[in-house]
Length: 370
Image (cartoon, rainbow, N blue to C red):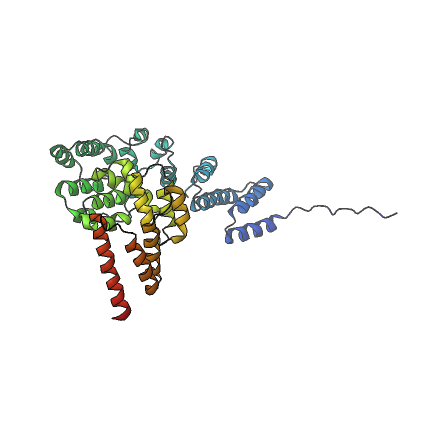
């Protein structure tokens, strides 16, 4: 009878071995494992340097989570392991993470622990206050610029929205050049003076950059609006539409059309026109879809299913245009002949169309034979 195998007894690592593991975890940025090692060391013996190292390991772990965009998890860990000795991440950094995920009510008490707010954090807090989140104001001194200049900033915005330029100018005088709201002040000054230079001077990294780009697009001459508009993000495009006074429903249709024409493949645009509930008038939708067919002839069946059979004129014209796209000019001429014969020359409008076809055929002959 075989003897049962005896499992070897587990021998816990020595303190020296644990310290070696800790060093390896730190070098490899394995902060979660590093935390567990120092917890084990502190179970063996409480030493101030190990307690300090554990606090530091928690800080590194918190920052690693934030670096991955896991701000809520980082904030929760920071709150649970925070001690008076905690220096990294700073409270100001954690407030920045809270701003990123909208944890506004929990920021007020932390703001009291920051003696001097970094300039960038002040600007971010100013944007949130302008949005109406007054709950964070309780964490700020009454004489702080964020509070003192908030009233004039809001009043200036409200005055601009109702078209009261005089009040806008009056309120802007109460917002100093170095105020956390200075870039909003600059944008409103640009609107009053129709000065694109002031808008272009807003840094691309500014929190107000999107507002500046949208405002700049709204002031762009008509011939250049499409280029400027296409460079905007969706939320900036929507804001530009509001500034231009475009009906929101019309703007949505325009944005959907642009999204469907981001490349040379017009099939998505065809599907949008033929499937979206009443994007345009039915007759316009048919003409729009018909114009796409020479570029996407494989959609002819879908077109006929949606709008009915192609007329002899439409069918011959489609073949003619498609042949031209393939540079099959002899074949195109044959199809254009069929298009011409499909015209009712007794009708004045179709007679003009017939004349245009003949001129086009002459142009093709010139291409073919010189």
